[in-house]
Structures are given as structure tokens and as C-alpha cells.
Image (tube, rainbow, N blue to C red; front, side):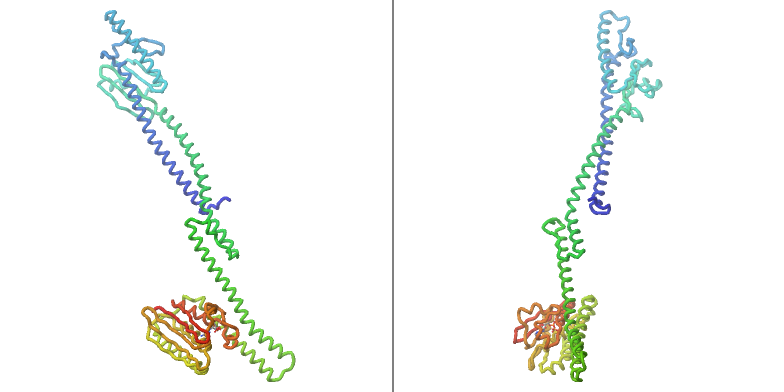
Amino acid sequence: MIPHRHSIQWRIFAYYTGLICVSVGVLIGGFYVFEKKARIQAAKLEIQTKLVGMIPFYFSANSRPLADMRRHPGPGGPPMWGAEPGRDRAERVEDEARLTGRGARVDGLLRSLRSEQIYFYAESSDGEVLQRTDNFPDELLPDASSLGAEDQVWDFSETATQLYTVHSLRGRGTLIMGEPRSVLIGDLNALMLRVVGCALVLIILVSVVGFWLLRYSLRPIRKISETASRIAAGDISERIDTSEVHSELGEMAAVLNKTFGRLSEALTRQIQFTSDASHELRTPVAAILADCQFSLKRERSAERYRETIEVCHESAQHMRALIEDLRDLADFDEKTDSLVRESVEMKEFLANVVSVMKPIATEKGVHLESELDSAVVSLDPTRMRQAVLNILGNAVRYTEVAGRVIVRCIKKSNTVVIEVSDTGIGIPADKLSHIFDRFYRVDEARNAHTGGVGLGLAISKSIIEANDGQISVESEIGVGTCFRIELGV
Ligand code: ADP
């Protein structure tokens, strides 16, 4: 599949291909500059060496100037020098032989120059052109006024079109050797064309391989996004396969899996909660409907009507309690950030909570006592009051007549512990871990008796944790229960 042009794969591919192109471009540019320099340097060395090789033939060994030599005419042939007239025959023969040998060597040298497109020019001190190769450019013809007047050895000269060396000796003559710049540049351009061609092939190869490597490397990301898509489509049981993701993405996959797990748990809880809530509402509604239908079927006695109204009243009260608890829970779930914290003196605070519960406990025949240390804690007093009241209400509710409920506030070094202990019916050990779950009740028989809906402790736990506290419970059947709230000071 071709990736979208905004995809990470495409972007990384574009970036690195661009980077490779720029790098290769810079390398080729650098190579061109250095190669050109090196070639000019090599050409200079070659021309100078060749020119030096020519000097003995034109500025002769016995120091006679070139002008003294007789030039042999010949169709395009090499320059030849005769012997001086007036010398004796033996000398002339010797000169002739020497000069013929030299001529042959000059001839060979000029042939090799021609094959390399190097031009050569030789001029005697009196202006006679002794040698001029066909390709010698007019623009380099020596200026009579400047050349030959004094010794000049020009190291190396460059014009826009020529690279050449001039060697001029006063009273002897002038030698010029060089080559057109176009020859050197032409060779260089041909080389560069091959280099650029190779670089292009290399870039294409690297890009194709890089594209597939990138695609392979990004496979785990694609897997993660595919799994996330399936989860988004509703399959919340899906998880990212972390066994295949060994790279840095493994950590991310594990975190995502954890998040998905928590989301799935939350969703399951939500579904359970809705089903529990509707179940809780169904029972009183069913009771109201059944009683009303029964009463309306035919004429009933006043007492029967009264019984029906009582059932409706009781059911409505139960529903109101449930609705209030649900509203509290929903409110709290929504606004955990909206706690209004303040420094609360716990002794005063708990004494007030106990005083609220006192009449209910007294009415039930339960002794409600308190042992409170003085301690200041930062918390939301309204919410915390609700939490402690739920726990205290349970303690009174599940304690028999003449039983005892004690509220303690114990100040420790870094914490304040609120204990609500009773001598009530207790909670079975296997049920203890569930009593903070929403709608959990230890058994329906107790509920029928006490009228609870199983939300009180869930609400209390949420409030306590939002106030950075923790709640725990210890209980023994027939002995009693102790709820412990631990708050940071
Ligand atoms: P409910 O509204 O039914 O009391 P809670 O969430 O307040 O719901 O309590 C959950 C269950 O824990 C209750 O049904 C009850 O059986 C048990 N429970 C709570 N507090 C006590 C206690 N002090 N003694 C014995 N059982 C308790």
C-alpha cells in the first residue's frame, strides 16, 4: 500500500532522500572542484616538463641560438637545423648527424604533443617562427615588443580558454607550450557525467531499499494503530501483541494495553452499574405495580387500599434513597476536581458527626461513644462528613440493641486515623474485599431488614480517596467491625 503523503513513513522517506541528494550533490560538487584543480595542476606539470624537454632542441647544447641554425623545409615535417656555413667538412658532417638525430627526436616529441592536443610554438630571437603546431591559438602569439627583450620564464598562465607556459631567453628565442582549456574541461565533464550517472543510480537504489526498510521498521506502529482501530470500533477485548514489539514501541504498547484494560474495566463497571441500578429500581417499581393492579382489579376494603398505599410509599422511599445515592456517586465521579479543601480540626468535626448520629443510635438502643484526639487535616468537610456518616450509619444499623459503637480520632506522626468500630454482626471474611464495590451487599436478608442499596461504602471510598486518604476494614462475625480511615496531615 502506498503511504499517504502526510504519513510518517512518507515524511521520513522524503527527508532522508532529500538529505542523501543534498549530500551526494555536495560531494560531487566538491569532487568537481578538487578534480579540476588536480587536473590543471597535472596539466601544468606535464606542459612544463614537455617544454623543458624541448629547450635543448631550440636553445642548443653548445649554446648557439636557434637563429643560427638553418631550417630544413619539409612538407609538414619536423624542424631541422643545418650546420654553419664555413665550418670544415668533418665538423659539418658531425653537426649534420647531430642535428638529424635531434630532428628525429623533436619530430617524435611533436607527434606525441599533437596526440594529446598540446600546442607548441618556437620563435627565434629575431622573430623567425621556427615551429608552430596547427592548433596553436593566435591569441597567444608573442608580442614582439615584450618577448625576447629580456629573460622571461613564466611559470604558468591561464586565460578563459587556454593553459600555457612561455619560456623566453634573451638573444635565443621564445618557446610556448599549452593546451586548450576545453580539452581538460571536456574530459572532466565526461567524467562528471559518469559520476552523476552512478550517483543517480545509487540514490535510486538507496531510496528503494530505504523505503522498504522504513516500511518494515514502522510495521509495529501500523499494528498498534490497527489494534487501536479495532478497539475503537467496539472490540474492547483486543490487545496489542507486545511479543512482537521489542523496540522502544514495546513500552508504549504496554502502556496502551494497560490503558485499554482500564478503559475496558471501566466500561464493564459502567455496564454492570447500569444493570444493577435498573435492577434496583425494577424491584420497587414491580412492587408498586403489582399492588396497584391487585387493588384496582375490583373494589377493596379501606384497609387494603391503605396497605397498597403503604407499599407504594415504602417503595418510593427506597427509590428516593437509591436515586440520591446514584446522584451522589455520579456527581462525585464527574467532579472529583471540585473538592473544596480547607483545614479542619478533626476533634470538632467528628464530634459534630457523632452528635448527628446520636439520636438514631439512642433510638435503636446502641451506645455511641467517641475518643477524639485533636488534629488538623486539609480536606473537603462536606464530602468527608458524608463519607463518615455512611460508615457510622452502617455501624449503628448493623449493631444489635445494647451494642457499642466507638468513633476514635488518633493522631500519629504523619497521619490521622479515624476509626469507627462496632460490636455488631460483623462481615464474613470472604465478603470483606467486596464491600466497597458498587451495589454490593453482604446478603439480601440483611438488606431487606436495613433497607440499604449497597452504594454507601462505594461513595465513602471515592470521597476518602479523593481527599488523599485510604480506607480499610477488619471484621469478625458476631464480634464486630472496625473501619479505619487514614488521612495525611
Ligand atoms: P448498604 O447501603 O447496603 O449498607 P453499603 O455499601 O453501605 O451498603 O454496605 C455494603 C454492605 O456491607 C452492606 O450490605 C452490609 O452488609 C455490609 N456492612 C457495611 N458496614 C457494616 C458493618 N458495620 N457491620 C456489618 N456489615 C456491614
